[in-house]
Amino acid sequence: MKISVAVLFALVCASWLLLSSVLFAESSASPKNNTVTAAVTATHNADAMRVQGEFRYRANCGRCHSAPQKFPPRMMATVLRHMRVRATITDEDMRLVLFYMTQ
Image 1: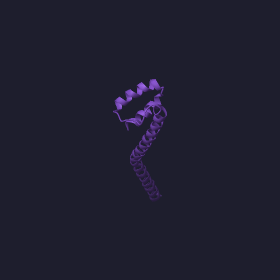
Image 2 (image 1 turned 60 degrees about the horizontal axis):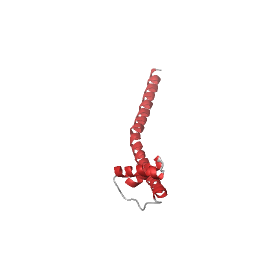
Image 3 (image 1 turned 135 degrees about the horizontal axis):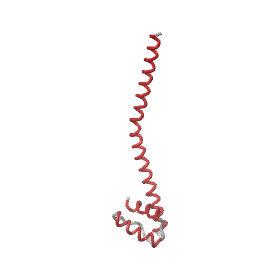
Image 4 (image 1 turned 120 degrees about the vertical axis):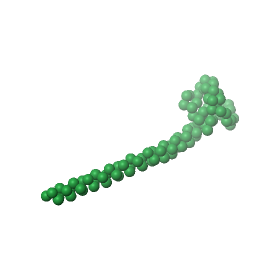
């Protein structure tokens, strides 16, 4: 009876060690996957914001202005705040156009 209890105990310990090593391996690999996923998502979001910004530039600003010039972000933000009032551009449109104009 003592041998079977010892064998059972050894099997339980081996199973616990195997399970904990698998869980540890998954948890240590997880941040790398999250970092890659975050970078891909950020790139995708940046591309989508740039496309939306260009679309909104053409819809709102392109009526009066030709192709956009590149200005420093602070200067472009000032111009867009001024034009937001004059052209009744929404805050979201302003942010997307600013992203488009400064990227």
